[in-house]
Image (tube, rainbow, N blue to C red; front, side, top):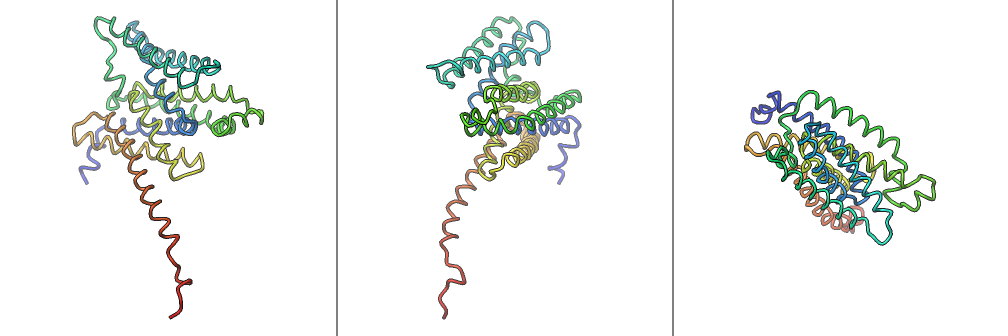
Length: 288
């Protein structure tokens, strides 16, 4: 069993595992609402739309987290503003903001003589370089995300299934949508510098989408998504250690692999279920 437990006896791998568990829980809380509302494109756009803020912060020598937060907040405000614009679909507005923010980030990076912003690090992060302070920050972010999910549960549910009914019930869908964007921003900003935007997006979408095939209760989907994300982190770190692959990308691949395996299992189960239901029971067999 040395091949299974050996990698996790190393301190930096242990920290990487704990960071993945915390990120999985944060992304499960935000990602469930993203998947239920069909906002996957928005999540991807916000994750990659942080590049101009990160690039500018790197060039100015300030915290990358501050730059990412400002850029993500600008993206969220832009999405909210364009969402109220008549004659322009939300997907179109998100696409325009996505391309505009990403282009601005690449322009800022290209103007830097030293290319201070590592695009590979931006996409994949450095999960093996997690420090103790990072775990504390992720723990705080998880507490905030959990509080937001509990306090906003009713309006989030109404918003996810019927925005007009939410308005009728007096649940104020616009503030609820803004709060949901804030929760999504928190998940992305709190996690990107550790695991990169690719892994954040992978854990944001894949585990909740996987659980939705097997669970109908939203809290169960969230809990299951957190467990799936943690298992993908463990599997990805283990495979990365033995195969010598990039840890962040391997974890993201494991999360997506879980989704396709779950889809295959669901398809096989659906094919088998009609046969079981149509098979005659022992009580219905004719007497001999």
